[in-house]
Image 1 (cartoon, chains in turn blue, red):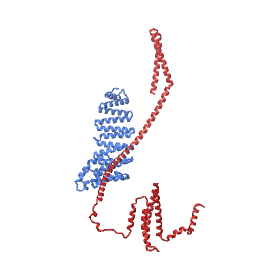
Image 2: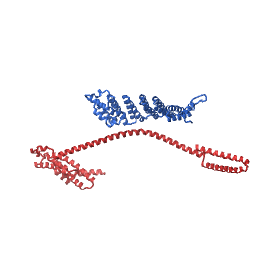
Image 3: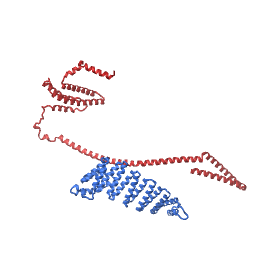
Image 4: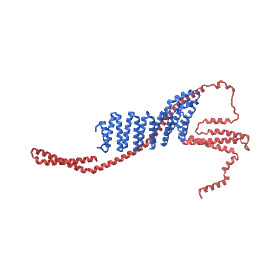
Length: 297
Length: 307
């Protein structure tokens, strides 16, 4: 076997092309050749060619009815595409890999693949990332592996917050709460609910925050928990425009232990809220007068 | 007749002949209808009993017994104080046949009772004695507050040295308490963090549990498959080449090699004597045989290795 990847690829191509002399493609040898060629390209840092070789190897594995190996090759191809910066390609390749994993009947690696894809493209194609995260979460939920979905939900929330789509972020957090409820992870659940309340308040939507708080209070444990009490204090302080109280609550350990994306509001926006509110004649107008509510936290 | 019946009968008989019981009649007649006197007598008896217990407690070396006796005394004292209030009420009531002096005497007796009750030692401090004394004397109507004018000058209300010292002490203690409070705040923050960390760690571990179970089953399966394979391998090897056959093979090999080498030597010697034309075919046959034997042995070795 020659170690020159170009020759290997050429050989493998010849093996798979059907001509008069060859009536059935020899996929086994072709796949072997493709794999070797792909590794050689990767070592030589020729990412484009490596990616192509991996794709062909994956197709070969599919023909050999081994979707697991096919999926693995797809993932390698996608990782190389990430190096190249072809974001659309990355998303497509990872999706294909996850479909192959689902064919194997393994939901966990499938959702991992989608998660990796979403993480790779979230800076450049945030909408695609959102879609990928959602699909990953639904895959896990179908397979009753909700606990693995927590991280994905948190990442999804972070993306939404970056896009400033606060209702979507809150919705994602509530879904996280639901998943946590199914696994009896009460601490995560309460933290998710408190984060949702904070996000609503940040979006200057006090009514939605109150409604959210009331909905979440249906669970008696939430009312009596640290997070529940914190949430009620926040809502009351915010509706009264009591800046001191908001500051005090925001510095309490309950808020600082929340997810980074949500608790970072405290550091960034509280000073602005304080500044804006101090110029107003009365504290009540705090909520109405500042449309850019730097809300909470 | 059962024991219960006997007891009832004895009780009935005693009741009927109670009037002949001298001791009891004396007791009952001693005070007649005087409720006050009777109650007073019982209280006195209780006080004496309590003093007796206190003496025993003082002499007792075992702490548990002393503690029990002291507790009983405390209970008795509390009960007796209640009785004393009843006695006070009774003492004020007018009774037939009692003169005014006797009534005053009764009032004094009742007043003296609380002091006597408090004097019963029960293991607590003796500061209560003075309180009892004050409480007793306050009911006297003769006492008035002595508000003589001479003392109410400015000095009376000035801070004396002692009181200013007290104030300073108080301030110092308040500061120290504030420091302690800060320390406690720090501790509480730390505990909050720990609690959050612990909760998160707990949830993470809960997440890992089903994964570990899966790994467990998969490894068990792989383990059993491996064991099966090993057993099959062993069986194949033993069936293919049992040790007896192997020894025979080795002996045959040695014999053939020995013959071959002998012939070869012999042939070399003979070659020089040019009689090889006769022996060359024989040599070729032996050579061939040895090669065949070698290849046969080689094949069997290969088959063993490949299982």
